[in-house]
Amino acid sequence: MSPPHSPTDGRKMVLYCQECGHDSPITGDWDESRHGDEVQFRCPDCGHLVTRRPCKEPKPVPL
Ligand SMILES: [Zn+2]
Image 1: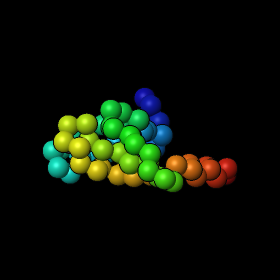
Image 2 (image 1 turned 90 degrees about the horizontal axis):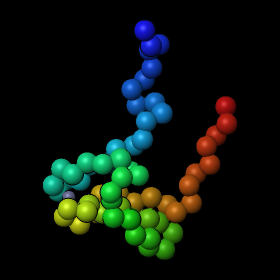
Image 3 (image 1 turned 90 degrees about the vertical axis):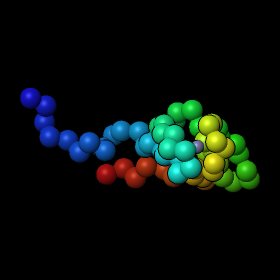
Image 4 (image 1 turned 135 degrees about the vertical axis):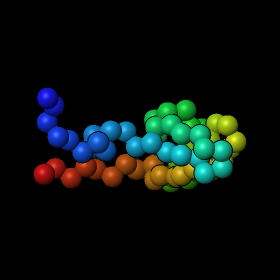
């Protein structure tokens, strides 16, 4: 048996389009475009702006 593990731990973040319901991992088929200091993720199906992230990835905090 596999040890109990949080299902969201260590998995890729999944984004959902609120317009058409398209879903894909953040590394998936989203249309990424850079605008200044942020990256915008748009739905490849309907072009809806799904999310945006700063270009500078926050550094993971070592435990
Ligand atoms: Zn969409």
